[in-house]
Length: 75
Image (cartoon, rainbow, N blue to C red; front, side, top):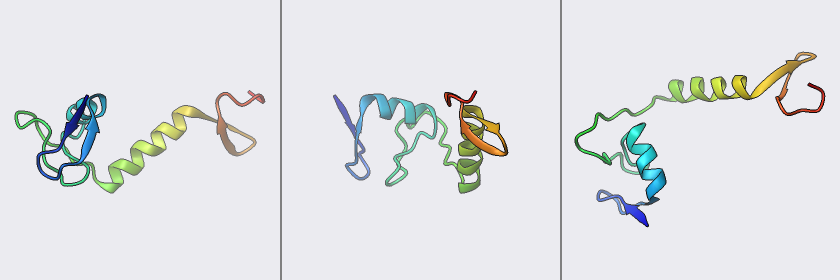
């Protein structure tokens, strides 16, 4: 099954459209809301960068001044 954006006909799998509806609630192409009853949150570039940095910090450790994946054999 899939979801087609009514604003631009972008195609999303149902799992992705549900996840995006809970997060930003907008189409990545045209910013049409997935669910008109939910609040829309469009992340700024700074928010996206901060979130990416938090993910990197959570998934890595510092060894000898370098960030490496937590699954690295040196841990």
